[in-house]
Length: 379
Image 1: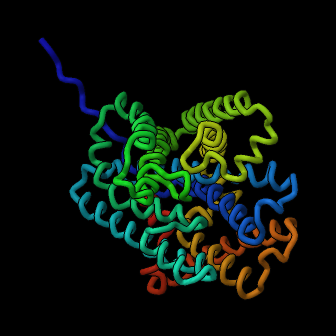
Image 2: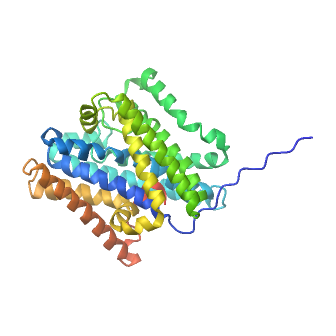
Image 3: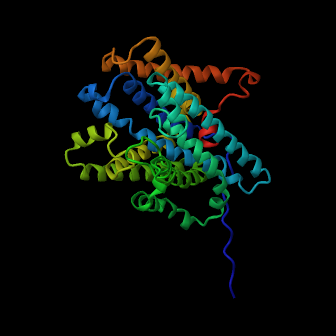
């Protein structure tokens, strides 16, 4: 006599936002603004030693934290609803947001590259070339056009198989080493990245999104109970610390390795040392946000506000850097690193203020506004 295994039951979606997710995304955005603000006003070679390590090196936590939180938000807001009758409408909303992010990606590409000439702008718009400061939006735009179709399959996948899914990194590595991509480097860059292109590959960064989906499922089951939430945060922190320790053991000359990481060595395609450092730091920051919960999110309210609307944060800080600071005020290579860092911190504050004011506008005025994480993470 045999008995069927009980079906896997997904936890219910929360009725309110989990502010800790916005806080984690806010850390990612704020670190990104610090990196963009300083490097947008002066070349990395002009940074002082303390600007290279630790300041600029620590900003490399940002990208990995973005991808992980993207998966966490999908797991919390959308995976529990894949079996609902209105799932097709929710899926289509994600697809429309992907198109919205794609639109802003192209508009901000023009903003970033406008002073480099018409030819470079056209090449970037037609995917013959890529920008650098706004390229992560290109990843999200494409990801939101195909990942929503896989979420129902993910919801039905047994837990043990889910935990094997991040091994898709092996597939990405194999394709990088053996696939020709029809001799089109831009296609390789979009799929698994290319050493000559500053682009985020869909498959090369997918393992971090899948890790976020796994952690989001655990967070959804534990965020209401403080002991379980702290246990989850502790496990994530230990995993992050282990990756950072592994990085330190393999780094050799730690100072020089961190300088190389700050210069993006091993970022595209992702190398081992860069990944250990970036993912390890991202997990520690995520653990801090989960442990602090909504209380810490309220204490660090400006960071949480920035994380609540990441697309708007992109629009604001990129526009301020390239339109106001570089073109109108002509501050490129005209300030010291200390001044560039101060201006970057001011960018963070101005971004938080703008988003806070934007959210206070009457709804008819902001009904068609780009909703940040919703566009980038499906909330």
